Image (cartoon, rainbow, N blue to C red; front, side, top):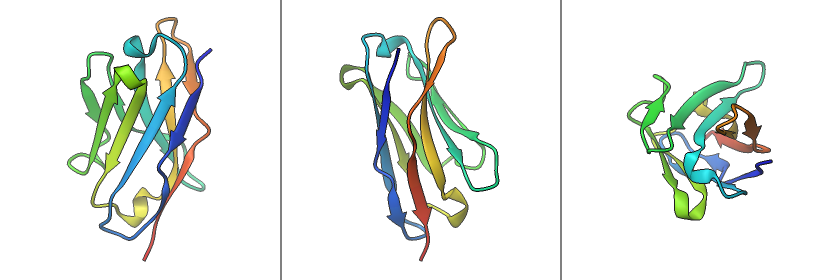
Length: 116
C-alpha cells in the first residue's frame, strides 16, 4: 500500500507560478513511476506529466515548456513546477504512483485555481 499526499495548490493569477509536491509512503519510491494528472469540472482526468524511476520526464503537449516534473528519491517526493499558468490549467491535480506490480495509487488531489 502506498499513500500519496499532495500539497501546494491554491489560487494564482494568470501568468503566475505554483509548485506542487507529493510525498509518498513506503520504501519503494525510487522504483515507482510517478505522475501528475489533473481533472477539470466536466472533463476526464488527464496526464499532465510523468517521470520514470530514472528521472526521465514526459509531458502533455499543453504544458510542455511551462511545467517541470522532478523527483527527490531521498525525500520520497515528486514535484510539479507550474509556470506561466493559464486559466485552462485550473483543475484538481492528482499525484499518481505506479509500482512494479502494476498497481496504481492516487493522492487525494489539490486544487489549482487560475484567475485574476
